[in-house]
Image (cartoon, rainbow, N blue to C red):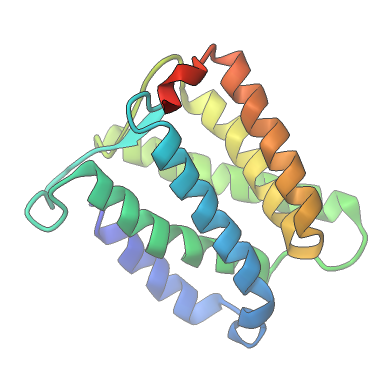
Length: 174
């Protein structure tokens, strides 16, 4: 199943992404990729969530290979979709509702993934924390699209807050 999602996301993206805006979306796509790579690096020995093998173990033999496929396919494609329809006007209510919509979509994808054994939770993480994280992530992506430096600062504060909240020991990154 870890291979199926990127294929589905690619088909949806080919149909619905506003490709003419790709160059303006590109920095935010890179931001998303870097964010996931940083998570994968910092939490390699202490994951909050982890993508699990289903039937594709011969194609993706390690969890790291699953992470890399998601990092360089699913997440960029979903970021493209998210940015393609992000409300441009200054109406904050529309933007918040849009972010809530994407948070629910990600939550549903994650719930199905959990039911299929594609993702596991660890160290106190659960679907509620994922929804909080997803809301923050989409909010930060929306900010990054227009104000990248601010988004980087907010993401660092949010990340360190989660780090502290979950009592993660900084010696993990030694």
